[in-house]
Structure formats: structure tokens, C-alpha cells
Image (cartoon, rainbow, N blue to C red; front, side):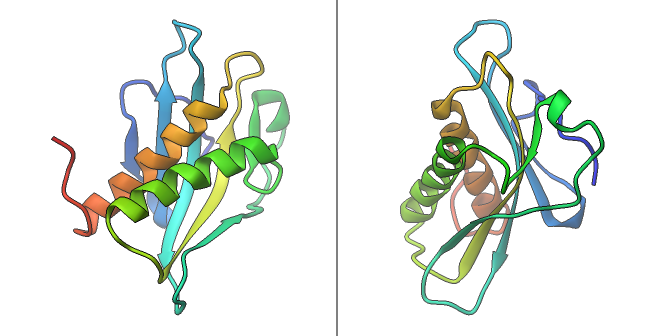
Amino acid sequence: MSRLTFDANQRFKQLDEGLLYASAGVQTNCSGIAAILVRICSIDSLTLEYKAVTEPKLDDSEALGLFSGEQTPKAYVEAVFDGAREMFRAAQINGGYRVELVQTLIHPVDARVIKFREAGMRAARGWLTDVGLMSPPL
């Protein structure tokens, strides 16, 4: 798996291995930043599932502010899932999918809960749009 980096120019993109990259915020205005890797997959369930997962850990990852989904502080995990949940509700989808938080990039000073929520929304909206379950934003 490649290293997660913050990209203010590309807010959403699909990567290899079914991973989705999403970011929120700008590094220059101190209003906060967030970058996440998630995976959204279909499941045989009547509900939506949200899970923070442990992927292979990179060497020196914590020194770089990189955390597996499972190692991510609870407030950021909940914010990512709240954002994704909002987009699934907007698309009127109540089940059949799991959102996995794979990795987060947490800036030691500029990380903000609201930006992780925005990144979760962006990842879910991008995926829902790409698979034809939601119209693109105007």
C-alpha cells in the first residue's frame, strides 16, 4: 500500500486495491486538514456497517502522522463515519455496504474533527457518484 499524503488539489480519487482517497481543508489557512483512505464494499446485510481496520503498518508511519483506521483516535473515526453516513442517507441507501477506514493522515497541529467529517462525506459521495447511486454535485 502506498503512503497517504495530503493533496489539496485532488480531493477525491480512486486508487488501486479498491481504496478511495479523500481530503478536506487547506494547509495554509489553519482551519484544519484531514486525509483518509477508505474502502467501500457491498455486503450481504440489511444495514450499513462501519469499521476501522488494521492494514499492514508502514515503518516510521506514526512519525509521519499516518495511522491505521484502528489506531486513529476515536473522535476522528466517528467523524469519518458520520460524514459517510450522511451521504448514504442522502442517497437513500440504508444497507448492503460496509465503509472501512483504512488509514488517516493526522497533522499534529492542524487536524480537526470537522475536516475528517468532510473527508468522510467526500469519500462516500465520490464513490456513490462513481457507481451511479448518487448524482454528481452541481
